[in-house]
Every structure is written in C-alpha cells, then in structure tokens.
Image (cartoon, rainbow, N blue to C red; front, side, top):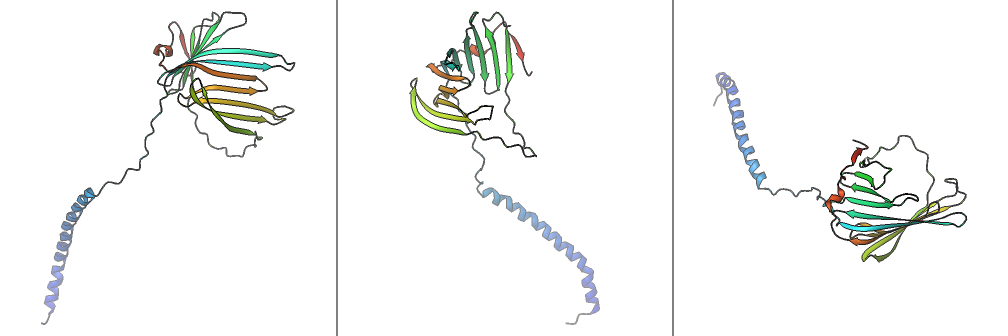
Length: 257
C-alpha cells in the first residue's frame, strides 16, 4: 500500500487529539491502583510498639518509730562529753515524714522541734512547740530537684584525691527486721585542711529494705566524736493524718513564695 502525503498530514493532525486521550486514560487508572493500596495496608499486622514500659512507683509502708542519737565527744585531755537526743518519727502512705525532737536546754523548759517533709513536692515545714522565747511561726522551705549544669569551658584546677572505701557488712536482724549494712571510710590526707596527719572518718549504715528506713547509723569523726543513731519501737501502722497539718494559731512563713 502506498502512503501519500495527504495520509501523513492527516496523521499529524490527529496526533494532538490522540495523545491527551491516552494521558487521560492513564490518569483515570491511577486512582484505581492507589485505592487498592490502603486495603492491603489495613490487612497487614501492626508493628509491635517499642515504647518504654512505664515504671510503677514503689510506695513504702507507713510506720511509727523512735530514734535515739547518742553522741560521745572525747576532748584532748581525755574528757568525754555525752549527749543523747530522742525523736519520734511518723511516715504515712504518701511518703511524708514527721520528726518530733525533744530539746532540753541546760537552763530552761524542754520544748519540741517538729519538722515535716513531703518528698513529692520537695517542701519542708518546721516549727517549735513549748518554747516561750520563739514565735509561733511555721517556716516553709523548698527543695527543688537539682538541674544538671553544663561542663565548664575552661579546664578547672584538679582537686586533691580523697581515698574512699566502701565495704559490705554481714546482714543483721535489727528490731526484728532484716538489715543490710555498709561501711564507708573516708581519709583526709595530711595537709589538706591544715591537719598534720591523715584523718579517717567512718560511717556505718544498716537499712531495712522492707521499710526503706535506716535502723542504725554510726558516724565516727575525730573532729566531732562518735554519733550512733538507732531506730526502735517500730510500729507498722498508719499515723494520724492531722499530724501532717499546720497547727492552729501559727503563722506560715514561706521562704520562697
């Protein structure tokens, strides 16, 4: 078959019409393919969540106990000075603690110093009862969480080394509770604070993990003497909620309102 010039001209004349029709046909088929994609995705199983597991805060049981601190200081001439301080401690189910210390002045009437600390808010309140020389004021302190500070740009002067040692002690049963103990030994090198020989300070702590309290603490410091704190008369009962409230007739003074 012979193709003449008229046939070629007709082919070019219809070409612009045929091409848009082909493109429109491809465009019409594209949504059909994309509409099938979500159905295939919906049938696929969802990937496992790699989210961190939320931690459950441990609530320690409430208790009521007595604390006795005996401090023995030995003077250079061999004289021993012994002081004994007693305190009553309450802790509720929210972790708030109330410590009531009895102070006995040498010449005066004994009075009580009361301190309440709430670990969830970082707030401590303190006041005195029975001291005629002190106003009826509840002082509120705030203890915010420490914020990490950036490292200094310039190198700092290196501190002298403090030899420290930590050792585990055999467990004991104290006040009917299983207690784990540790001894911390700190040595201040000669000349560090003007001392002409090494000074060694030791601290022993015995903790009942069941209650989360320290049953016995012994601090032996040559500068301050030996202090022993013991927790006794432990009752695992909830204290009266009114013990954690501000007493009537007292003015509240917030140190950081």
